Image (cartoon, rainbow, N blue to C red; front, side, top):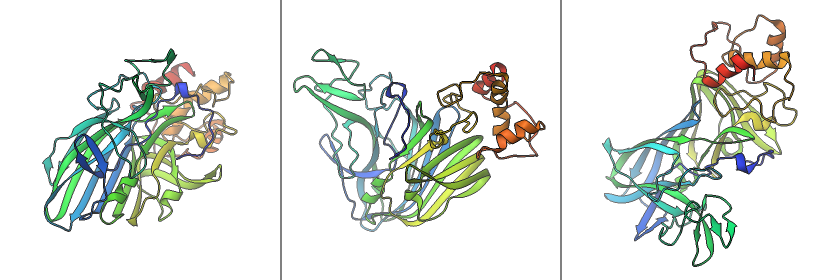
Length: 383
């Protein structure tokens, strides 16, 4: 997890801290127990995460798994933590309010999936215990505990035991493996976390890959895409020290960044894709893709970070409080700089050239066709 110190106020933060890579479970009554698979190896995984301006990420993950034994059936799936400090209603059906369009196919056949509300846990060997919702009540149902308000709505409360527990939503499905090679492909749409100190964050749980028979991903590819937009973000460098990232589509660049004694890979993309590939990948931690403004909070000036999405707040504490004409002029021109416009005004060109995310494109002709509603506000109001 990140170790960057931020001035983040919890009341203004929506987070979802664990979701992603499919592990294998043993279903015993009402219990999902993570197990170590002995016959089925994770031969290949291609994970594609597309970052959007609407506050959502699209996940597309393709697996090739090799069953070295006889035909067998196992349960696969993942858990996603309940949103923290958000007013969304609790789902007794186990459907996460910020995950949608979940699909899963195995060997070309569409599968059905199940949901459950489970006790949250982040250890790779933990039990995800589906909770008795007659016993455990949500924040909306209880709110008060012995005369005091519950800390937040990511907890459930058992009044008989005067006990609190964190919970998660589980997505799981029954997978029948034939001997030899099997393919699984699933997709979903996810509302990215955000807060005062960062515009977006995409956590992804990689550790369940270690539950398969080979205790690794033999061939792993990560693709992070910014399609029809520009994104400036970072990932933890230690997780990806095995090889280098590469821009495979569009315009982009990368550099290694050190912050608070941690190493990060900082990426700027415009309508492009950055890719990381490794053989015999043994993830020792989980992944976060985080918007890059939190790398620049010390000495932050207007324009050091820019994002086209509605979650980006140029009037927040990160921005200089000056509301002069010069300030408004910079705000109005940020959308153009994001698209690589080479400014004829020397002062503007010099100003934006000081920012690492700025990637000039002399061939781009000024057009407002793809400007977002948030960008129109910048242009029309200079915020």
